[in-house]
Image (cartoon, rainbow, N blue to C red):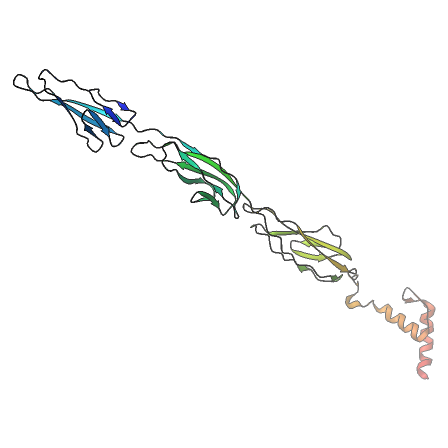
Amino acid sequence: MKGRERLPSANLLLTATGGTSGNPVVLSTSTTSICHVAGDTLIFQAASTCTVHASQAGNANYADAVEVVRDIEFAKTPQTIFFDALTDFVWSGGSATLSASSTSGLPVAFSVISGPCAIAGSTVVSDHGGACTIAAAQPGDADYVAATTQTQSVTVGKAAPAAIAFAPLAHVAGDAAPFQLSATGGGASTPVTFSTASAACSLLDRVVIIGAAGTCTIDANQAADDDYEPAAEMSQSFEVLGDPPAMDPSPNGATGPTDDLNSVGNSETGCRCNNGSPDASSFMLLAFVNPIHRRR
């Protein structure tokens, strides 16, 4: 009987020769959970080490033969996993199908090594964009060793955004006060930003400041994030009706005492004024005419 060895199959034919007593060699095993002997055949129940005993009884002339013990190892069969490549998908409503097999025929288990993915039965799903690594494993059993884990990568694409909600803007007068802009984004976590290239208005963050008369066009944009593509630009235009009024340099709109004097001179004396100020002859005429006018 051979000593310790690794076997490729679950059954082994045992051979042993006895001593000169002529009695048969009896084969047995002390590892009955691993193997058993049926006649001269060793049968394994599991891939492991089986201890086999060979003994021979003596007779009137010969003592019992010394028992021979041998360890026979039934090696587990190696196995290989075949893991199909994964198809990229968009996280919003998309998925990828998992397909893998082992040469042992044993089932393959999938798991997520990295990324925002999850396993749902035989599919990969995600609720975010990003890159995922999926593992396929087969741990083996009593007859097969664990297979080397195989991996596949999949890219989870960004979702298409909804449109930016940017309401129309009303026309304004040239002296309108600054006003705040408001818009709702298309799904991304990034803020909606505003810009303009118009001469009729300018922007201070989200505040519109009215400039010259004309058309003011405001553009609203939203950048991409990890989950959504950038939103399509949304624009709104409005008219600035007339230029803002010029600033009056005098307080309360008054133009100064020369206006009063000019008014008096024009209404009561008919004097001619130079740039709102009477000349010397006008002052003299005013001095002489007014007393006479009062005596009447």
